[in-house]
Length: 475
Image (tube, rainbow, N blue to C red; front, top):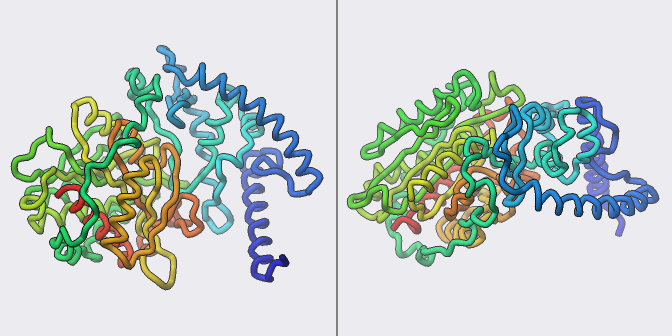
């Protein structure tokens, strides 16, 4: 079938974008051409595929050897100045800090318009990248691809260095993602059983969502977890949430100077031994200049704002004290961009102290809605818990019927919900778009991720969906 002129233009545009990106990488890192993808010439492609099959066979053998040897418990004496990263349930690897910084630099390469450009891990030729810098000589192919590749907001790994001594969490894959298989104890989705929803949904305030995002993204030029003022956004959130009656807002300290914030509502008759319902978003931000300017309005002041606003509504309405059977917490996680650092520390703290979690809803980049017509778009991430994801899909369709609902996968280490899944808790995450969606905010992880680009009217639907989920899960 012949292509239309529009299809031809789109294809040519795709070629130009790919070529531009490869040139950017080559120029920035002095790599040989073609390291991101196979050549386009058909005869060369046939040779490429043949060679690729041979290499794939060899790599598979190497991967199996690596899995059976390198994925076991980390050595008692870790390499000097290295970080222990988990890339999947069966791949944990020590990465030298200089190598980590070098590889993550690939993610911050922008085009001439100052926009990030996608580079899936599968498109990265690890051998060519390795040759570009001697510090990568002992880094595995899979780690190079995961760290140098860029898939939207997906972090792609969990930094478990600070808990390397915990054998149960670093040496086995059996206990990991136990939360992915938990059966749901939730009632059937039924708006008629929750008449309070309409009153609570009417309390969603576009102006208050804007106020929270404005404070986080403009009062603080950056919320980067390693910046000199990294602690200030956490204390602002603590102060803000403390203004609501019966909300306790406490700081959970990390090994870096940016604490998590735990905002909690405890209904009468409940305590820390009662299973808790969690809402979460990460408070930190990053950009190509993270230490000085990283507004992070969408990523993830937007998700944090929704979680905080929902808890404030539950407090102001009194619903949490008269109808809820479980405590409800809104978490603001620190250091997500550094490998889910804050959420991992908190999830493991809850696990070690025997805390029960009835369910965790994570909100990631919920403010960017570029469509000029139609309703809001809410994307439910399918992994790691398909039952939780399906339940959330049902909740959104029943309670926010005007929303366009999507579903997609994200992968291991996607965002903070993976920290709680690895600890054995049931989780789900919603976002405006998946990490590889063409409509994903092009300003994310850049200095142009600013509040003026967000649609707060559509973002309010995430608050309504989150309220509905809490009513279903906490009643």
